[in-house]
Length: 178
Image (cartoon, rainbow, N blue to C red):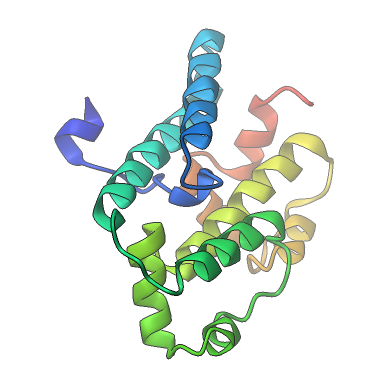
């Protein structure tokens, strides 16, 4: 209902979906179904993020259908690399130069093709990795923040809360260990 009334929200991210194919959409819908069966309120931020990502990706597919941008494959590969290696110290200006694009044009193309700015995509990937580390390790907030280039513990907490809807500490306390 909120998506219909308010549109795609701050959790939306085409970057949650690995690629533009129907298999990825199927996997996303399958995970949404699994999350809905759990009825665990702590999973709601993940479910909302997945649903919004799916809607954002569908909108992006519709907007870019039929466009033959010569940079599409390179930008999609870059987005995938950011998802695989969020802890890498990415230099987005260098990535723009590597593609022989100005920084402004690089940002515009990335947003048009992938639904968000390169920085926003990278930040999302880093926050998702931080969530994984909170679930799967006992590492401290400062160590997670530093390892993912998310600033100090206070900045990390603020960013995490804005993106996930819970503080890192509350997120860690509320999830069972995997």
